[in-house]
Structures are given as C-alpha cells and as structure tokens.
Length: 278
Image (tube, rainbow, N blue to C red; front, side):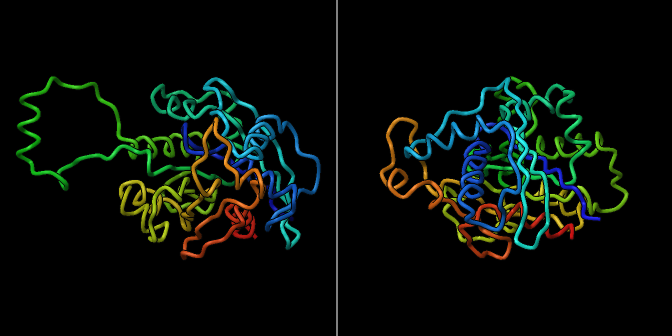
C-alpha cells in the first residue's frame, strides 16, 4: 500500500514561504515540473494573491503574524506516486513563538502528529552571525563583560532552530535512541541567489550552522539539504520587474540539489521526498 504523505513546511518570518508556495503552484498549473495536480486544491487565496503580484513583476506582502490557513494540494509525480501536499500559510513569527513561549497551539500539534515529512526553510543571509571562542580571543570576552551591562538571554538563531526541532520531535513522540527514517527531513536554504556561492548546500550549511548540521546528521538517517531560489532575483513590492511581467514567473526560480546540480524545477524537493519513501 502506498504511504499517504503529509508534508509539514516550517519556516520563520522572511524566509520566502509564500513566494515559494506561489511559484510551486504556478509550476503545478502549467505542468512544468516533476509534479502535477491530480485533483482540486483547497484554499488557494493566499497563494493566488502572491502569484498575482509575481505576474506583475512585484513581490508580495508577508503573511500576517496571526494568520494560519491550510491549503491542501493533491499531487502526483511522473512515476504515479500520489500525495496530499498540506501547505500551511502562517506568519513566521508563530514559529519563533513556539520556542520562546514553550507552547504548541492545537493547529500545529495536529499537523505535527500527522506529518510524514518535514521541510524546514532557512534563510542563511538573514541569520545573526554569532561570535564565540573560536572566532574571538577569550580575553576580548572578559573585557566586554566587564564594561557592559548583562543582556537578557536570547538563544542564537542556530540554537533556536535546534530547539524547535527538538520540540517537534518530542511532540510527535519520536525517540532519538537511533537515527530517524521518519519523518523524513529536508532543509531548504532559501533565497540561494543572495548567497552568491558555489558551495554545495550541505557543505554551506555545515560551515554556517555547524551545530545545527551536527544535530541533524546525528538524528536523521538521510537528511537532505537543498538550495532554493524561488524568485531567482530580488523583487520590489512597488516597482514591477519587466522580465517577470513579460516572461511570467514560471520562467524564474531554481533549486541546487545536494550534489550541486542546478534545476529550474522547484517542485523537486517535494518529489524527492515522495521517491525516497518508495
């Protein structure tokens, strides 16, 4: 019996979830990728609004912090595998609040318990660069502590992401006594174009967020790290981009696979999860 997929998409604010959803939806509509619709999707308002902006060559607004809307897209790949892609559209602040408040709302709890696959979006360019004992001499920390007032503790972006994954694993009642096969994990390094790098996605994650990469490698059998540029270039919310308006948003966007291969099919991260399950 074919496994029923429920794919949980997770990302804080400003990582490009809505833009990725709009571009993903456009690929399904024009059948320009490894996946296609095999039924009627539900609740597409947030993504069609974003797609309308992209068609005009403009970026869309961020999802309001209090918003949580689920959109279910029945999809099929070229090998005949089926899945329901459950695409939650929510304000990224909700993800940060899961960790700071140590509380998971009912809408999130239900989705985590049902998920067979997790896709975590991380925007490396917007993460804080942490200074530690490996980047500064010990003496400089002692001098700074003597001069500065104690600051309120706040975990680093890297530590917060690890804590989020730990909370979700605990909620889903997964044991970490041995590496996990399920839920399968894919990390999407979003806005890849702004990084201006030729490194492989797993190598870049290991270099920029070594503690997170160590945690992921220790607790998942085969985690996947993929670079994603949903828009391919920065867009303004007010000034239209002529190329987008002329060629259409489906001509833009790409992924960088773990081996460095570049593909314009931005549905591949999801299709790869479906194929791995088989």
